[in-house]
Amino acid sequence: MPSLENRGVQIHYEVHGTGRPVVLLHGGTVSFKHNYADFGWIKSLTEAGLQVIGLDFRGHGNSAKPHEVESYGTANLASDVVAVLDQLLLPRVSLIAYSIGTAVALHLLRVLPERFDRAALVATGDGLIGHPPHVFDSILPALKEVLDRAEYPRDLPKYLAAYWNFVAATGGDKRALRALAQASYPALSTTDAAAITAPTLVVSGQRDLVLGRGPRLAQALGHGTYLEVEGADHFSLAADASVKTAIAHFMKPA
Figure 1: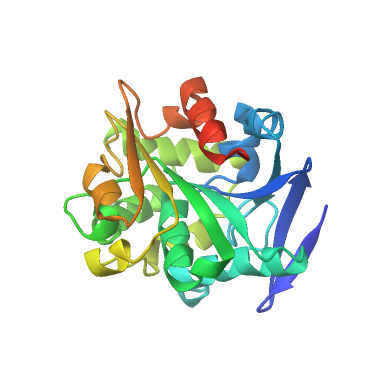
Figure 2: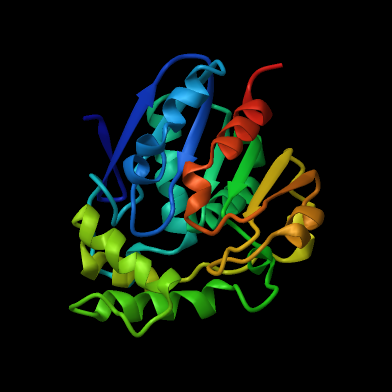
């Protein structure tokens, strides 16, 4: 399996198909495989004429799993993405991101606009521009509590307890994920959001209890479009055929 070393951390990545390159950024506690590949994203996107590039963020999947808090945070996860692009000699790509991956995507769109031509942000919400209650400073302590439990946390809301199942099912490293949950993922200011001019599709589930809904995020972006999926929650968007179709259409070459 291909990998590279970024600042002393081994990062796993994979490439599927040919065409316009799209990099997929997964959510917390899972991996490219468990967030995208297992739900048919590779097939949907490659059939639309896109080249799919997936990576596992540090702390996840087949990438290395440092246990230090300072190894994580938005900037460090974003550096893993840039390292993969540089390894593959890709000057400019599109992004598809999910959950905490959307914070990484927004950071990249802001600091390296010349490297990214468009983006789809899935299972995200207005907390990414600081609107409570779904901001990472409030959400991540609850994730750490889940990770601290030795057994399935039946006393916690199901949308939080689900993360315990994800870690158990994927064989996740709890120490690494605790460190991830204690790092910093600051909200974007509305000024910085407005400066992002790459066309960006914001996709939220109507019943997302993790990151909520994102109409104000889409409106704040310089060129944002909003799609809300009726009845969907934070996790079901990964398997939703309508979401894959909408994003493939948004991403595919003209």
